[in-house]
Length: 217
Length: 308
Image (cartoon, rainbow over all chains, first blue to last red; front, side):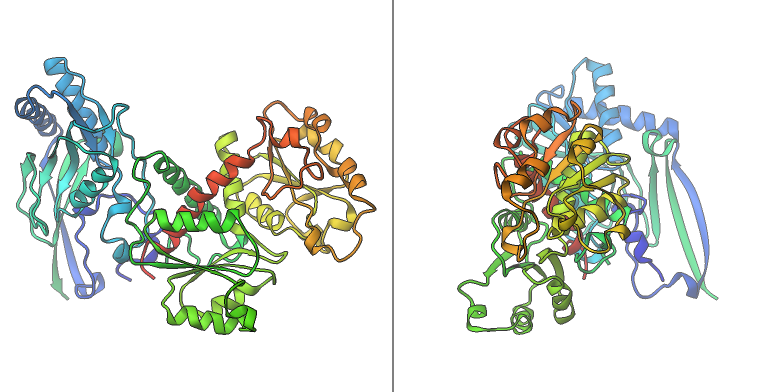
């Protein structure tokens, strides 16, 4: 009732797990009268400035992006990684290789949430051995996606170092993981969800905070 | 329930278009992994897959074993030879033994059509049919569809001829169901004696004339003449069969330039397929074996990866 099986199945909209807290058991949508509030916390111009700032920080912290590789985590980490690479090239003329790292097969919640379609993993032709790998994702939440990504990286090669860039850090970490580059820290409650939209995947650039306050009716 | 929306994979007809496409798409990603240095994923860690083989098999058993191991599942191989089956143990008692050992999936090959269906009633785990008698072999059909898609780009509208011993062929039956689901057009070509009763009801055309069919197809799949299942005289002599229904070099020249030649193996070289055709660049026979591992990884992942 809460989560129809169909949502687990194929036609599921591939929203990043990190933005949607799993709620089981208590708190059925039907038992509560819900009011849903949306708030746009990052607009399109904010988002462009954030990407510019992170690009500068990457250049600063990685010696001018020397040996750097940007790996985007699907779905929205991938266009973010491409944008960062484009900005870095615009600022310093350095071409940073961009890849895609799908972590589905390394997740620890497959048993809970069911098998899901897997996406492509594309590494730059020169690989990641000895490189400074910067993982890029949209929202940092429990940290479990990043744990899976670190496991996946270990099977693909041996980077010299691994860093993490995220657009939004919404807190509620369940693992000792932190980001090296954060677009915006957004304190959230577990009943809130953060939804990142990007022009490439959703037609528009924004970050939206959705609050569902439920009163027992 | 898993994304395929079936608990067991017993027949290719169990899969709808979305499910079958999910297997092929997942297999594409699994195939990309075969080129990696570490060819192993942690996805099925702690799961047990039993290969229960009552009939001889090289390709299918090895490929299921490799697929399960690459996904980090524990694999138990069971072949009827050298087990208590040779002491007369029934399928049911063997099933209960596997149940007690906590098998998450049982991959079964059995000479009796319908054995996987029976097994599915006795155990809690997922049953995957790896060939039952003359009935079905769904993962073979999936890997054939995968091979056709990777060579031709798409399956919708593809013209496929399946040639030979359709009567005894579980590969043909599964392929007809799956290719129909995926939008390809199948023509079965065989002597009348090697076509099953009720063939009119299959979603396929039937022809007795190989030479008339070959020029118009994108794929020709040759079936093995199954001598071990032939209790009757279905054709006058092997030479006559080879002359009328064998794919020799002359016939291969009649094929369109882009057409591919498939065979599920093992081949009777010189009987249904000539050696020079089997080893030509049109032939996807070795490719099919490699694709088998990726497709079976996809099936195991999609059926076992999630919750039960």
